[in-house]
Image 1 (cartoon, rainbow, N blue to C red):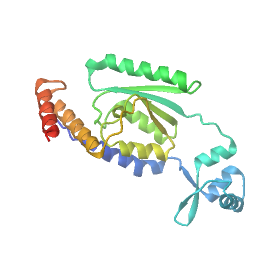
Image 2 (cartoon, helix red, strand yellow):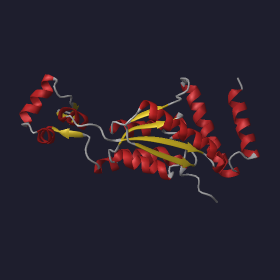
Image 3 (cartoon, helix red, strand yellow):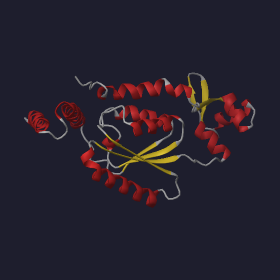
Image 4 (cartoon, rainbow, N blue to C red):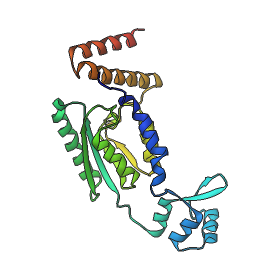
Length: 229
C-alpha cells in the first residue's frame, strides 16, 4: 500500500525547519555586544543609539537585539542575495504549462528586477508534497540567508497547504514573497473550502491517478456537496 502521509506532514516539516534548524544558522537578531563588535563601536554607544532611535532594535524580554539588516544598513552593505523564480506543475503532462510559468517569471524579472542575480527552480509534483527536491533546495538557501526574494506566478505554486508556515520562515530571514497573480481576496470560508478541495484532489490523485475518471467524479461530488445550500 502506498504511503501518502508525507503530504499532510508539510506544515509540520516546515515548522520543524523554522524552530530547530534555524538555530544552527547565523543569527538574524544580534546581542548588543555582537552588534557593537561588527560595527566597531562600544556597546554603550550602541545602546545609546538604540535609545535615540538611530538603530532599530527588537526587544526580547528586557534585552535589546539588533537585526542583521540594521547592521548591513549602517555599514552600507548591499544585498547580494538571490532572486529565486520558482515554478511547479503537478504532473509530467503539464510540462508545457511549466515552461510558460518559467518564461513569464523570467520576463518579469528582466523588467522589474534588472541586475539581480537570478536562480530558476522548478518541480513536477504535488503542491502538498514535502519532498520536492527543488523546494527543499530553496528552503536550504533561505536558511543560509542567500535569498532576498522568491517569485511565483500563483500562491499555490510553493504549497497548497500550510502557507503561513512558509511565510513565517521567509519573514524570519527577511525574504520577500512576490506572487504575480495573487487572485481575489477570499473569505475564511472560501479559503477553508479551497484547502479542503486541494487536500481531496491530492490524496484522490494518489489513489486513483491524477485526472483519472474516479478522481474527477469524486471532486465533482465534493464540490456539489459544498455548494449545496
